[in-house]
Image (cartoon, rainbow, N blue to C red):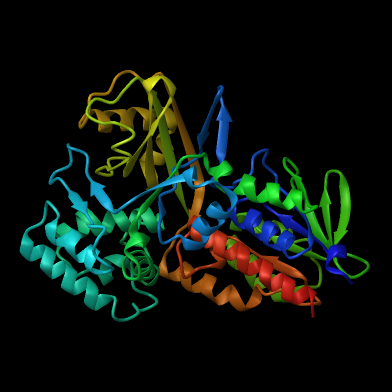
Length: 447
């Protein structure tokens, strides 16, 4: 069968699904993308509400996200994002204050060592001890069952609280007491120990949907594929002939293969209608039992923020009470959008709801900066924003990897951050998974 006659259904138009579909289309296959939501991007998408467009969350992109940036560079002009060399500055109300900057002229990992040695806050002795101990820890792979808190037990507490714990929560969206040390160690290696530019903060100039998913799907359509937004897939079945049938409200269509790129909590439902595939039972059962972490993002449109300028002060570290990071964006007319991320949200803060979280974040910001009355505010809560990156769940997801490869008899591939468990649930993991799943499906279909 010629490549042009191979039709592949991609279920999910998030970052993994859109990259997978574009990879398949570039290889000459005809991709049909099904997305339940009206806007592509999955858990990192544009939201349109009350006449405004904004992101459902502020994802902290790093220079280490090489495949993600490669796709963005291919699909956009150089103005799609701004790179800022590693610089972490805390809000003035944080005690003790933190200011850490890595010099661009030093190679990795010496740029990080210099940033830690010259940072404000902990004593020089604590900084030197932390550098030596973290370097020693990274010389070996942490035990699979070890948490970040246990792994860092002998690192000075001041360095943990001011630098490493916020980085753990920001990267893994899981508290250090529960987070996987093995995954966190991999994050540190990728971000700080290869190329100094890997530690750059990457600040998008576009909304998250436009940044990659929309552009990748435009490429799919340009190459003869189809994108069907607001079209949930109800079930998948074995076709009477060779292939997989995909059912939507419009009926059933048969495809040569299917690539499932939904959030992990939706995969068990899709697999439940696929008869005669006991090999996928562990995948269904594991994903059905996953625990998740919530993320909330609070957005304010303001006339100004006293003491900050959005073109100069793009990111600020907060004290976690309740938000961890502040992102600033310039709006027309000199206005400012302040977006605050609340990671690993649980318990009373999560139960309080959007209005209470907006009020709490306003009080938090007002301790550090002059804050006028917002012109508009919005809180987006994603209760299942990421799977909890714990040692147990990391091990269970690693165990699924051999089962996820498609075969000529079972031409079903899987993409999504959960399929790349060596990394936390990040945009880079999603992009890597989309490329990998597409390549696996191509190999399977060409056997």
